[in-house]
Image 1 (cartoon, helix red, strand yellow):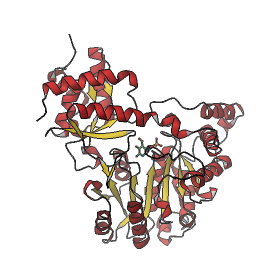
Image 2 (cartoon, protein in one colour):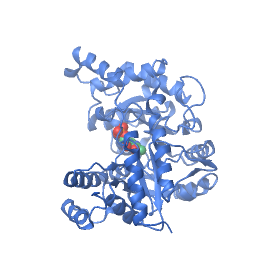
Image 3 (cartoon, rainbow, N blue to C red):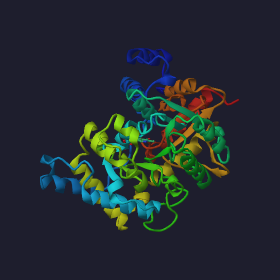
Image 4 (cartoon, protein in one colour):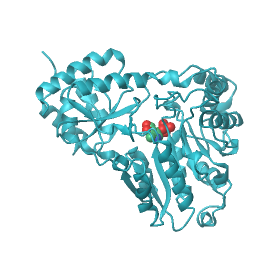
Length: 439
Ligand SMILES: Cc1ncc(COP(=O)(O)O)c(C=O)c1O
């Protein structure tokens, strides 16, 4: 007899045990716990799409370089806060070869995941001008970044880009920026959760706004190169990963080793700060910090107080992988392209069973297949849809927590679903459709 549908009473009881009042606002970790409990009780493997963990092994180049560095004794030495020289050089080379931008190694600074990069940027950038204290999120987005602002005692504004693609983005941004209190704008590109990728036109609009209103753009490139419609993985050759850095010098790129190198466990990323911004002086910084210089404040106040730098061996691992990629020995895009291949199949399975894609276009272009996509069904609200999918052994998160206005939607992450699970997914979606016929 099939386990599915799982009884609602059991789901409700587990929700109660875990303190989940409304599944729409459950954190990803709460959903993980709920599904773990259900898997254990029913001895069944869910199709797990709730958490954006890399589902691939790391290339051996990274761990091997770390092991070598550890054997040579780096564990006992504090790493330089600004990062080891080889990593800084390789980061700057990477920026030149894959983004087509020039940054001196000085502005390329390792962080404990890009998560720490964002935290430290908020901490410094939102205090550079007494009148500009807020971050504007171009949502939907990564919920933890809003939590970071909350724990820093800072406030934010946000809007859902769904209705503001292309030219419309300009007026929408101006609506917020004209108030004069926005210091930083943050978005991810490709976007977690929607997988929207900004067009060049949109990036230019954002860059122009940064120049006009002296706003710092925090461009989160956690999913670097993962718009697989193009191959952004050829060193020194176009096409390059699109970036706002082509349109303004008021930028900091939040770079991460977690997804492109499947290196999430080592918690390593980097800040790529434009030369102009790195050397800029902001007198208001001295209200809190010992210097008025932006780059020095990041290093000597932000990163020093947060963690006094980034794990020494992880820096060696990151540097080795970047070096391999920069010199053309390792093709990072082909190593992770499997996410795009999975998304293509999984999306089609959902579509075949009456679902539709919520965020589906980049202006007039079909969205790329990649790490995430968004789905909705009939006129179900997101919480109802998630609850019903869980009954059929499929987990996800709602878009409610991401700042999206599309409360009918769920985010599907493909990283934990290999080809061997596609038949299960198909079967479960068919059972779901039978129970909730399309209207
Ligand atoms: C948009 C976005 N930014 C940042 C991160 C975190 O990256 P890291 O592991 O480098 O801290 C994630 C992780 O899922 C993400 O989705």
